[in-house]
Length: 327
Image (cartoon, rainbow, N blue to C red):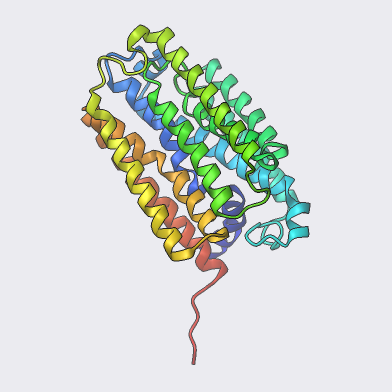
């Protein structure tokens, strides 16, 4: 068992699967929302195919695409990370080789494509487009903060739509898009990451976010008419649940700031919590809409997912830094 975990540890570090659950939860939310909400048109696949198949396909697609981005990041930044002596990069610290990183980039992209095939050709096309966007972000976006924050938010929003491109209620998609941009900005600024966010970059990102928001609004109106922003079948009170989770997240970040101050530690905490928080938004939307069966499934998957990824993280941490005894 220990030998197996030792072999898996470099892969886990490269792919960051312990923080991939939020991305998977976004896909699960769309599936459960379209499946259990009779007012949502949904696709034939989502309405008729076994739920376990849909959840498994989205799990593979979500983890695959997220892991693809993380592995590609470490691979493309290897020379820069070595020059800067970056702590935490598995290639730089020697726990993973460049050859392994190349294999993981290819394997995770194939997994993402395989998972998306469950939902049809449209989902497959979106997955490949998102993979291209992830490549552009890692090559250019993260070095140009204004452009990078907008691109990252679009990637998260597009990722959410893989199971059902025609979903009518797009406010949850807008929330995830906005959340991703805020997290990217806070992690960059409060984490004192390079390059810093200039006023010009902040203005560019704000304008980009506004344009993307208007596009989502226009798309929602084209599908639902005047009810596009907030469909008649969604209670107004449904928004209170995600709003509550947003407030809790802000309080957590404030506490981390008071404890750790500005710097890389705070930036890492913001990125980690921000990556998994969409799972709670998903639970909030389902509960607020009164879809209790879907909520029960989502909260169960969320608890299991958090538990599994926490165990994985602790396991490879113990392998790298085993507990010792002092005599």
